[in-house]
Image (cartoon, rainbow, N blue to C red; front, side, top):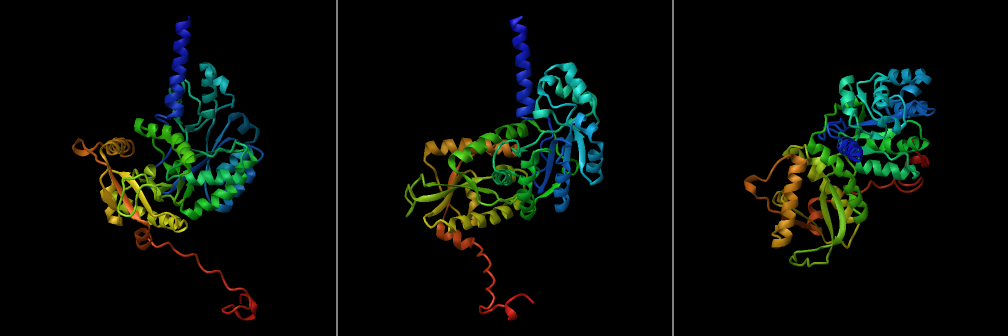
Amino acid sequence: MEVALGLVLLLYGLADLLFRFLGLGAYAHGSRRLPLVALTFDDGPSERTEALLALLGRHGVKATFFVTGKRARERPDLVERIRREGHQVEDHGEWHQAWRLLLPWLEWRHMAANPGRYYRPPHGLHTPFTRLFARALGKRVALWDLEGKDWLPLPPEALAHRLLVYLRPGSVVLLHDGPERTLRLLETALPEMLRLGYRPVTLDELAPRPLTPRLALIRGLQGFEERYNRKRRVERAGLGPFDLFRLERRPFPGPDLPGLPRGTPAMELHLESQRAMELTPLEAIRHARESLRRVAERVAQDPEVALVYGYSHLAPGGRVFGFRTAPLPPWPGLVYSLAAAWFLWLYRGELPRGGRLLAELAYLTREELLRRFPPSTPASPPPAPGEPGSPPGGGPA
């Protein structure tokens, strides 16, 4: 009996790990080459659906609503309005009580009760039967690659900033139809998204693809990246869809360079691999060049920083942008080379050619960075009325 129970628990745990945490086979994001994103709202319709629709309408964007059967039957007028205004309606199941999903006969009723081409499990929860039931019902399991965290008691402005930092081309964003916090968060984030060049669309327009084992592993590791950034105070140089660098201010760890010894204040460059993973070489060069302008803007604001640097197998390619290269000592060189091989496979699905992939140091001095990528200067404020250069009469014509 104990063995049978242990096997059942193991099966449920394995299903949740593979299909919820990693999202293997689920539809969780679209192409990383286009700045399209899908805003998705769970749990509605609610008393705030109308305000949410008004906000989306003011900005001219479309979204996808995963509605529960019980609430949809209570407010069919809202479901019809969502469709009428050009948004997509999909299935969030019959109820939102996770414990019921653990019983196969109840999970089947939950998934079969309502129409929809996409089905999103409450909390993303998976049992060993979820994918089997979805296939039998002709439904695709839709997850996400970015949580809006709108269920947390945090300031909406902080949640909006986090969303913009981790939003990527092709992202499927998890939000909720109900919390007041969601509206406040979107009031800040949505106009900024549009200004940065993102275009929110429905899930159908995004055309997500099922996650392969490699893409599922990338999804599962995203939380570690966020924790690393928080712990090391790593920040993005720019928030655009194809701003490719994050910056970590730290003493230069070496090897020693002429005039740049260890301990020199520096910025380490971290490549945003998910943003670059589907770009062609020419696209990557173009976006890297623009991204280095954002890096130069940040460095210009910190007079102590003497250089920017990174350790990568891509170091020789950095010469196109003026980077100099230097070999690494044997032990750090081995570590960074192994890391390079891992990231090459993870993000590009490729293996080192010839069995070797040597990482080198690439660096650019402050002076050279600012010379090659001069930061743009903000526009001068208009003169006050009555000052030289102001319009006659002290105001606009």
